[in-house]
Image 1 (cartoon, rainbow, N blue to C red):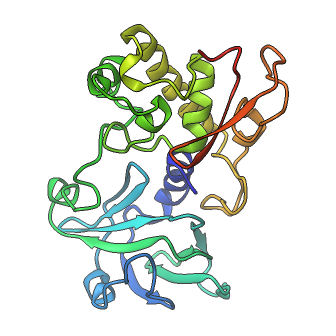
Image 2: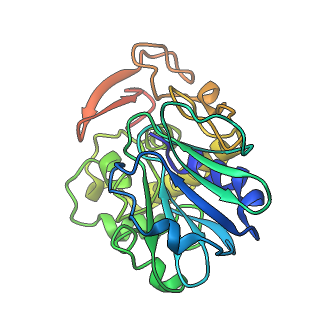
Length: 274
């Protein structure tokens, strides 16, 4: 599914078309997404100016002042800017038509994405039930090794599952958790509470580095993901661990191992990661 780099890449691609534009109308072809699209959303949106488009974890918020559109790409969704006369495809579930002559179109074959409304100002918007329990952004100053060390004390869960917990830190999904642990030299099976602070400092730094590098490459395309211009992400060419089970480690040539952690496939190097 799209993770933080893919969502941030999408945000950067579509923000120039949305920010400052007014919504002329909302066209909903399929309201049955992960949660039903509110029936009155088109009426709420009509004539509103989008002040800014920001990201919180894997969610996008199109801030309209006293309220914001809350969007999620789900497992297979994408948001693209298209021309008004572009014919919709089978899985194009809604269009947001703007007064600048462009259309924001949502495509989602599996219908796990969402389009909801968060009321109030920015603080109230981020208290929405889907956002309220989220941890710090991994690219912010609130996230560091001290935070991970503090939150991990007494935790017996595997460290990979720990850093994928959105209440601990947002947006670190399977791909980037796998890569960050490889570069930090940490076995993903280790108990979170038994890792020293110095190793968490290194892990926090590698999480940041991996995410920033992935954003620069436009994210990772494994199957469905495309950005706001319909382009795939190229970080898949730089993966050291994810998807490389049985292949030689790119650092030491030891065969990469595959295990299941929290019902997720996890690949690691038994020689480099301890």
